[in-house]
Amino acid sequence: MLPELVIGFGLGIAIAMLAWRAGALSASGAVAAALIGGLVFGLGGTRWAVLLLLFFFTSSGLSYLFGRQKSKLAEKFSKGSRRDWAQVCANGGLGALLAVWHGFWPEQAWIWVAYAGAIAAVNADTWSTELGVLSRTPPRLITTGKIVERGESGGVSLMGTLAALGGAGIIGAGVAALAPEQGVWSLLAATSLGGLTGSLFDSLLGATLQAIYYCPTCQKETERHPRHTCGDQTTLQRGWRWLNNDLVNLACSIAGGGLAVVIWALVS
Image 1 (spheres, rainbow, N blue to C red):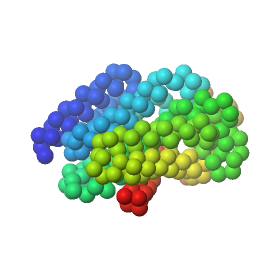
Image 2: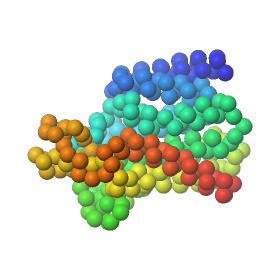
Image 3: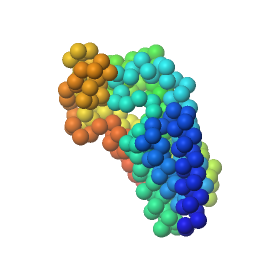
Image 4: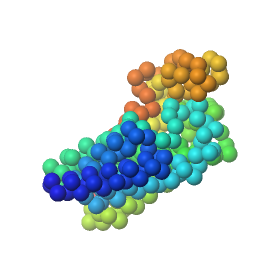
């Protein structure tokens, strides 16, 4: 196990450095990515590494391609496009824990399915966010159907939902191709549906329990705290103060991984 870990951490550090130089990660994000990547690469092996890289490169690519459009909504989001350590851990922390579990119990197939579902969920959520803001029709709150501003937490659109399905589906296709002995169609269905549902659960939390703040100067809702982009202090408008966007993303990955295992167990 030690040689695999050494190689894994070497690869994790190299990719994190490249991502940092490309502007996709902050310094703290690069450190977290190196640690998570090292565990996944070293303990999970090639299959696990491919899924993590598929998520990272497709999500980072979308952020780069459509960053200008999303920048117009920067006041809505809690952080910028350079992922910090908390964002990296929210998206990949569960995967790293599952990789450790897999290192000790590699014969348990459900761990691989849970990992795939978790990665599919965060990929679906990222695709939905990056492409959903391009929708010509305004989003609607997932709980009530009320029309809300683009970028508002809990808002969903047809384009964003289809993007989420695409983000989950590409991970599902990768899982099915990498582990066909576990059932191609069952893996594809479990991962894709688990990932999509995890993304929708993210939106549900954003509409109900996530901490959302208000800027009295701009008169807008935002995830930013303690200060808005204008520099003025924001006040809590709704939700639980401790439930920020990073924890919502973590919950998204947990939901996606858990549901993927349930669906896989039922259809395989």
